Length: 379
Image (cartoon, rainbow, N blue to C red; front, side, top):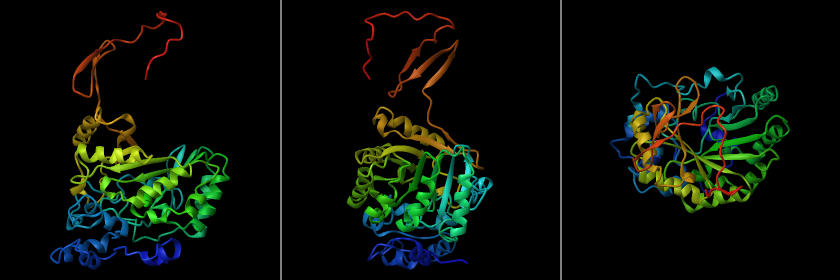
């Protein structure tokens, strides 16, 4: 049985009082986020891709062309699909042994309990299935997913994704967490979520209590621009970190949103100042209707080069590409080594000066110790 997004939200999710989430082209027009001329095209977009802009994100917008609005307010450009774009750009489908599970790597898998989000990013790589789909797994489907995890002793880490798993009400999430906590081979549980920033009111004491399992929980917060952050987001993240939950971040590199060293520096400093370690900077996926967001890989590498030496290592994420077709995620950052042959290199520093680096010790060479025994090196 199919349900509307609103019906599923009422049934499964905590909805804050006085919420004024925008879900229709008409509501976007009423808030002056689109124009009358744009309305027909936006209606066509909304027929295919879900729309949702939370109160928190509306409050962070300065206008329809700012870096927050561009992420969440639909545009007619989404109706343009290029030949290389695909409905399943990172290849989840071939690695789905049972509904709600994607198992690509031997030691970890994705658990997708629902396909709903508090906001719908206009560049989402699961945009064909997130929003208009079936929503929450049924009780039988969830048990089948948990049984699959029980049957896989090599699975060391379970990663909640979707949809946004933190829109599940704490009472519905609690038995899932308890079941995972009982599995001896599961040593880490990770959540990928936008909730702490885009819907911070959902980070309640009840939620943090449910996340306080014996099995360590890590939260990876999706955020793309420092302008997304209001006081409520900072408080939500402080609540999570105070509960002992380690926080990481993932960011998507987006044209005209965060594709400058200044925007990325501001975001990564904001993250670290709020006890969140920048983890991944994703190159844009080949999702349909998203070409207007994608940069080139060369641009991304140049941005990472310009950040090196500009911000500390604590602020540096890994620039990664999910290889289309389900072939995994790989780092694609710039290289600072030039092989000179004979095991010697030229090394480029952050200021673009090159330095010679000697070959390694010959096999069987005996090291010579010089200086006081136990002398340490400053780091």
